[in-house]
Length: 290
Image (cartoon, rainbow, N blue to C red; front, side, top):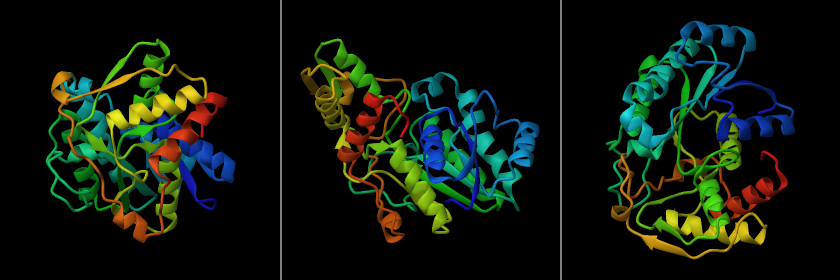
């Protein structure tokens, strides 16, 4: 990772911040550009950014990830999640490697075992459809790329874990769905895995996430337990409920557990999500990006 020059788009988000923190700690040259600094759907702006940074790798963390808002703002979702990645792929062709972050929402959630990279896709939401279209545009570009699918990311910024801690801090009982299953993934773990994948020369599509499987109820329970130990929230009761009792505009995959076999075969092994959660909450308590 150290010898490569990176350009990180969407650098103000959870993964972008985690990757830049890792780069600083490791002495890697990485230029981060937030959404306000670079609109990745603006070809001229992207060309200027590439010319200035002269990167070996472009890590695209920019995306419209407000899943429910995507249902009511499909044009915005498509611009950010489909058009922009395709544009980046075209502009990177023959130049830097494009590393693009995608999602388990490209699957329909009907699987009963971990989902491999080559499993059939069938997104159920505008968000998932826009992300799949972005993947397809990158592949069609013919440029060198790595599409890394991940899920349930938490880090510095807005995320499920922070929402749970904030709610628990109010001292009221919580109700959390227990019939959606995935792999909670710490942004810092994902940043390390992405760097390792690039270092290993990985191309194509790769699933990256923390080890272990959980429901949102499991994750919420662990967050409250670990958060209370660190004085970040109160220890409150949590009730497990079915998704049907908490309807949302966008359909979530019921089972989105990504198969990590390819990553493991490359020597990429991330911590268990419970250990990653503890490390994340230490960073939250200490007020630092990790």
